[in-house]
Image (cartoon, rainbow, N blue to C red):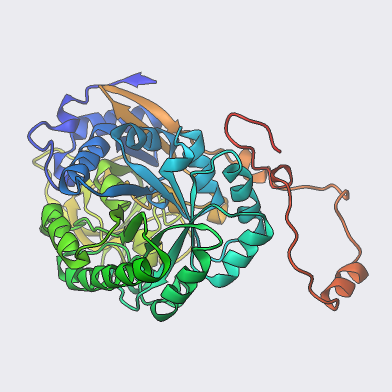
Length: 464
């Protein structure tokens, strides 16, 4: 743990603003953190997370708000969100485990199953036995059958495919993607059936991720369809507890892009839903944590190329994947440079042996020298979460600061730890003939397994 001067970092003039730009962070404090904890380094501001939670609660006072854990699953962040009074939505058994470990009770957890592996369902059902208020959202009738085989008869929510999608990139537009949810036209019939077999508590749909002002019409259409469906289900299957219209509320990654007016979004969402005998629910993820985080990386190479100057840094696409995967834009500044340093256009590249390992091309920053610290803004969402060990590179560290104190929230992975899954043991070896024989045998229904066989121990208890 380290005490630092974060008075300027939190920048009281920016407190409560709808978006926190990279320029609002105090460069001296960030450079001190880079020196103290080394780079690459994610930095999270706990107070900014609280401010974003408060803004959502103010805009949606009568709604149930569930934070989408996939944006950032760190325990330190989850505890801030828990204490702010926001619930969680989990996309995997691992995220449910993280929520339980962070102190969320079952009644504050919603698990949204997307083609769930058997191990996930086994773990979820194990935890459900001790947390009967946990809600499971299903996007396929097949998943319902698999839950019944495991003895589940609890709180069920149906994920709807409304055939309406939106988002900042085609890879995160889900509302019309066949992978997600049950076709809209089939839901009322299945709801009528499942209401007699489970505690049918809600319906859910999600348009996509990174929704901006220009996507609001698609979001509104999704909400309208969900309102109509909720009224139909109420007539044929009984009342619902909630209508969940997902999240995906975007943040502006470019310095000149306007922030989303969340109060306008809330008003238009309520109007589109109409009168329903159920509580509105939303699932923001990015909106809660994106502008609460920055990535710090150090310059190690400066190379004059034919058409550009390449600035090599110690972070790469394994540290922050979004630019390589989505062509995403992030603000970037050389925070080591003095205010009088001239700017120059550069290509900022990482150490990964891939041509896609580029953070920016032709970006104008203060002329860098070897050892300078580069800050990449709005990196709190889908930054660390999508980090990998490709090229056998350890994942970075993350620090969270609060009340002028910074502490390591996730320590830096070591090279030695990259080998922990390797084994030279013959204990679990099988003969090739046995494998071939199994491949030609008839496929039996999947069997359930205890949580001890998956390594999933419920927080505070032992494997069952």
